Every structure is written in structure tokens, then in C-alpha cells.
Image (cartoon, rainbow, N blue to C red; front, side, top):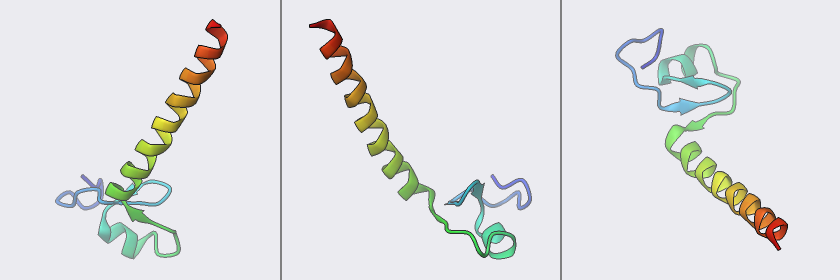
Length: 62
């Protein structure tokens, strides 16, 4: 939950997690996205990095 708006869940992400009221009041000029989109994107990035490490590890084992 937002530290400034206790009833608001953190649903938007810029450089830091924020609630919709903070985006309107304090983060107007920031690029932001919904946390669900960021989670999906970062999940794919993490999977790709894990595959890269596993491929390198397999190369070292040969």
C-alpha cells in the first residue's frame, strides 16, 4: 500500500512504486506503467537471463 495514501494499492510503476494519486500529484512528468505490465516484462527478461546463464554453464561443463 502507498505510504502516503494508506487505502491505495501500489498499481503504477515509474522509478519507484506509487499509487495512482501519487502519479497525479508527484510523478506527473515521469514515464509510468501498470505494475502488472512491468511484472510480465521483467519475468521474460529474467527467464532470458537464466537461459543465458544455463547455456554458459553447459559450455563450461563440456
